[in-house]
Length: 293
Image (cartoon, rainbow, N blue to C red):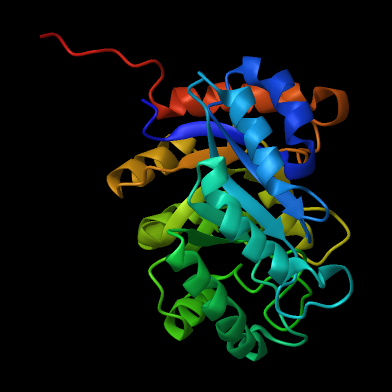
């Protein structure tokens, strides 16, 4: 039943402190993430300590993530490309072959970012391929649109087509989740079916769309019309998601991206995450039951 493992995201700088506290909840994988830079983190030492924590446990590190703007490299993003390089170089020490994050973007429309994307990630994809590592781009818009944004071009399927056509590398793909597509009122189910071959990692994050508000106020009115949710509290049928993943031969993980739910937050954060974990395990089929001999 662990062909698709269920886990959660943990900050890379906090992993050694946090992992021992949450392992007993039943997480099967952890995605370790960094914001804009790996900073002064000694990745080799962190990997050693994490491996010691996970020793003799059936738990894996699924991905390493770096979330910044690798295309401009300005201000707080000055170290983002170097951080991609570090994580690519150290991924094997954590036992993973996957590094993920935002693409970044240049000022202006997504069209104006493709050339720079090809330059930056062409080199990173080659570096990764030499080390047996894959790269996956999260599909979060970070408040951006087609015309403007500061973080990421990989939030729209048309952009994905442009990205993958401009840089034909088998080791680059998507870090996909239904939430970010639902925020744009895109139906995630047929999208996943179409793009399954490029999905390298799945974030466990859902959304609730208030269609009554959309119909009365539209999407530019004074009322919120969509909320990010922990799986089990949103609109998506994750049984369908997992079915499509299995049919497509996906053997990665679904790692919950917490700290977004408007209800199960603050002191209820881990309550919500553990509910989401158990919900995803049930959607996966529950406990394994052997066939009769």
